Amino acid sequence: MTPYDMIKSHLDTAVPFAAHVGVKLLEIGDGTASAELVQRHETSNHIGTQHAGAMFTLGEAASGAAMAGAIAPVIMDMRPVAAMGQITFKRIAEGTLTAHAKTSLPGTDLLAALQEAGKVAFDVTVDIRNEAGATVVEMTMNWHVSAKR
Image (tube, rainbow, N blue to C red):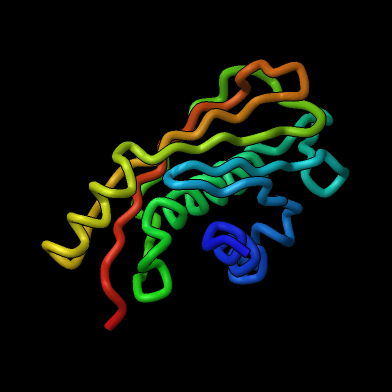
């Protein structure tokens, strides 16, 4: 099992709300991650499309997985907090959605900052696409990571 597999397994249970919504983590790498949300009645809005809150949860979960993947060697000793989220809805979203997240800095840079300052703040961009591959949501999540006290 790779460190990324261990993080994926841990995140699947560590964030019960994302699991409640139905978010499924697909892949985690060094500063990258993807996650999926299948549309169902519970994630739909009054017009039968994916609910904005469900899409935000999908994007936030993917961004958190990318963040964790970037600092994989020390993630268990860190306290990550989502500090800010910005979301732009590009088009109506229906069906299964897939979020692709990427950290703004490489993991090596983030780890160096953590080692030097004991904390780091950085953005993770998220592109959420529908089944046809069209972007339906663009997001930026800002993460603050510091050592556990």
